[in-house]
Length: 450
Image 1 (cartoon, one colour):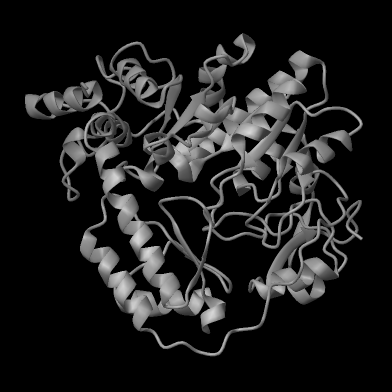
Image 2 (tube, rainbow, N blue to C red; image 1 turned 135 degrees about the horizontal axis):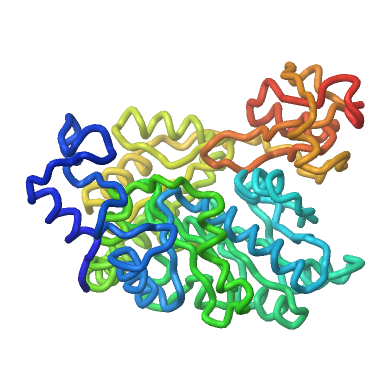
């Protein structure tokens, strides 16, 4: 497979041309990559309206993913905003209110898009952890039946941060029976297309989905994809580029574009074989850890999520132990430790991890469990909350107040309480449990603040 963006950047770097254009480093600098850092000069194409090398590279990616695929150099966050803009357009096309039924473990970008676009969200309740929403076909049907009018879109996060996979095929069938689009944040699942049997949402019936190449593929941070079903309604398919351009920078990173372009060549050749090689190695790690008494969760094949309390450790404590041994986890909180290996990890990396974890002494189980999660009362929309006067207060002073900004860390960038929701006793317990000590709330005297 050709790599037209990489080829153009390499030839330009080798040409010795005088650069009287952006960027200011003029092709040299301390990082060593400046020579191939470009802007939209003649021949370099334009990501907002590609007709040359970028268009060719996106066609290559589309062939690999089996559906129309667009590049993002601003991560899946850009794709999420674009997808939700298309959701609002679709609601207007159907003559419906812009209502989205969404799993509550949505990324914070979903909420910021709600602020920008003004759509309404009906939340599906979380399942034990704010990071997880289980959704059986029966639960989905019940949730849809409970609504007075159908939403335009169902929004799911799959894989979620813990490695759980939703039943995308079943959800798609239910949605399409009711003329509802299924949109999926699959940021952690770009590699799912290249498993021996694809689990990519676009292959399972999702109408739109995003994946972050940089999370699981050999792509620079910020490289992502927006995937469209081949049968996406025409009134949306023709607006995808507009949707992306609406929220994106006019100065895209050509280094990230080259990374996406170069990844196409690996996806066509070596990557599927590398996936097939690492999967049994990861299964062996799981078997060894289970035999040593570690509990694991999640069905995603290329993620290791430990529930370490049963063996006497918290996730945060275990992450610190690993870090002292030179192993850096993706995410840890009191209950989970999330590890994200890829085919580009060495066999020695997996051995080191396994040996270290299996050698740790078993301790009495940690019995503290997270407080139960409930959906707080909504006082106003996220948009109304974010555009109201607010104040930052210690958490102890926030009982009964209305959240004005997202209380979230990144990772995992999943809010515990949404802006516009009232902080009740249950929310207080959850925020305290996760170490959130301050909150931005509507300013006293603001409508709905009390």
